[in-house]
Length: 314
Length: 255
Image (cartoon, one colour):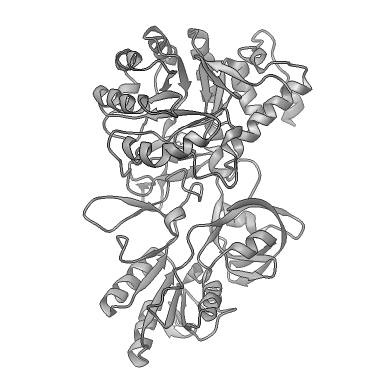
């Protein structure tokens, strides 16, 4: 078995596969079919200061190789999370990273302060990239100054790993990654969903209640990979790759492109054990290729020589 | 809840565009209850990407049957399954119908279209608990009416090709006007406009009523939050169709 564990800004993770925010609930919904202790970490559903009911139906629609969602950050709020969900998460032997969403910088700070005082939270991921809420979300995420400001204000509030989840809906994601790095962020998660849309031609109405939503799933993987490649060449802090990963092969592509670790998202909806299978598949690949430490794969892209696509093409 | 690769036993025709698929799962056949559903991965790979939810239609020893109408990519793929194929099944999911409620003696089962799917299992559960059962089924025409494995069935078709001409709620209301039933409870499943009509009829007649909802679901287990059902009450809030339903007491939801 290769060495799969690694340190992310001082936090020891068992392996390089985490489950993405909003695709694994609060960690307690998948127990019967997947053992979360086998994951590198769980990233919680986005937590806001007050509970959020979320958007009205229709919230999801399947598209070619993917899905659009407009959940609207439905969540039980940070206080109920601490009371009702955190006690269980403390018993799970893996890292727990709290994802935080807010509509003002003050609110981000307040939610982080509440969680910082609680045992069982190992790090934070800041959601500045939700495309489905009117306030907050993308208004922050597409503004480099705002992303820098949020990172600057949150950094002194915790010594734990501080990740910022970036949106691909910008021209140069590298600038945003650099802003996070400059303000002391420990890592960037790349990418959140792409803005997308679906229309019912019978009624000429949008399928989603919010007209547009966030595209995820295998359809976005090539975009995500290119964003990870771009971001990882721009900064020294770790880039966590996300976007359409359903198999170990997908994850390996992200690691080779420059991701230090990956998150599995939409694939959890089809198989709650998807992340565990991806982690096992990465180990198998390393064994088969005589790689003693998964770290050797990170950023190992050989950009000079073109790979043969013909073998698998036919 | 479990995820299992289940051998397919076969697909048979049950009506115009309507089929029954049977697969084997010893564990799920034992644990599933009327009103719960199964989330099927109809193809490997990512087309279609998401699982498709189906009510458990019948249980025969270790076999589980689902009833489906070929209306899209998922059901078209299911139609082509053959004996020897393997189906990736997640289930049983959702909450069962609340059949143990002592507040009624007769279950009035109302099914519209493919809403008949959970009714055979429900009828058995009711009989086991000593309840009487009266069934009302509606469909577009006789060729889409699936009355197998049900008894005491009254039918309605939109085109009048068999039974009462009109909708199933009109049929039930007409029947109950002529044959009053003491201490009834309605269990209904079908398209949303029909369920709304059932709910207004139940409220007007002061009959307790549960409706089993159908709609797009991403995961079936509550992690994607994609299937909100608006709850009754002054503040806007949602339950999840997959985890809190699919059957809801009409007093608890906005319908």
